[in-house]
Structure formats: structure tokens, C-alpha cells
Length: 91
View 1 (cartoon, one colour):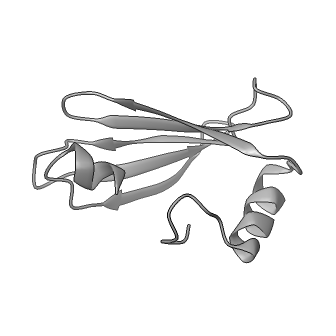
View 2: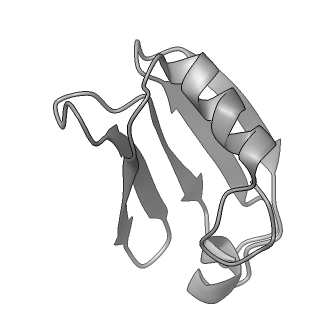
């Protein structure tokens, strides 16, 4: 995604629609715990669908990582991230 606040650039929006099969908007949910931050992206036209979900694990440790899963539960990303605190994990 872009670094333009909450806005998605046109090319990123097209890619998200292509990957999810959705033509409508999306809803992002975030749940922050003491050492993790979980998120899910729901398709606006069908709230039972979450094309992407994931988490930042081990916040506050040197081995923090971002894990992203697709709608069918396949892991699509697992990358190390710098997340010394919740603010950095959400950034």
C-alpha cells in the first residue's frame, strides 16, 4: 500500500480488486494486544469474506515479523519487521 495515509492509489486498488475478486470497498479491522497486532480486511459487499488477514507477532522483540494470510488460509507473506512497540507495528 502507499504511504499516503488511509488512501489507496489507483493502481493498488486495481491490484486489490484483481486479487480478491471484489469490486466494492473494504473494511479494515485491527486488534492490538500486548505483543501482537492482528488485522483483517473484509469485502464491503460480503462481510463474511476476509480476503486478507494477518498479524505482527513478537512486538517489542528483535525477531518481530509480519504474517499475512489469504482468504483460504494460505500464508502469502512472512517477513521480518522492526516493531519495537505497537505504534511501530501499526505504522
